[in-house]
Image (cartoon, rainbow, N blue to C red; front, side, top):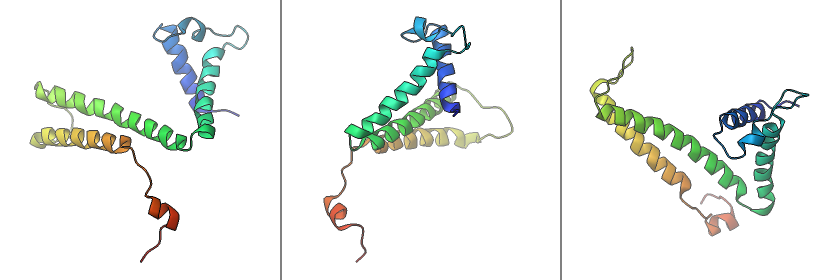
Length: 141
């Protein structure tokens, strides 16, 4: 069975290792002489998600933690772009192209950054289920 995500991750691992940007680069950048594939990088790309999935056997809220971590990663990556655009705007940058926000650009940029940071805080905020709702179920009335 083929897994394109595992293939993509193994290519990233191999590329970073080839450029000596990650620990274990010597081993992770090796290519098999028989298959011409970075087998160690491919193995790591399968092993790490498997270990994370096994956490679910030992921690009741592991899935919630894993999904929250992944979602926060996406939000943080996007907020880095928003913050970079805001920094550039503050230094006098004006976007080019057919679509521009004009004088609203700075306001929207600040609003997007504030919203994104608040969303990250909301996602990371620890929660416990309401015991009464958990015991009775969700009923109306």
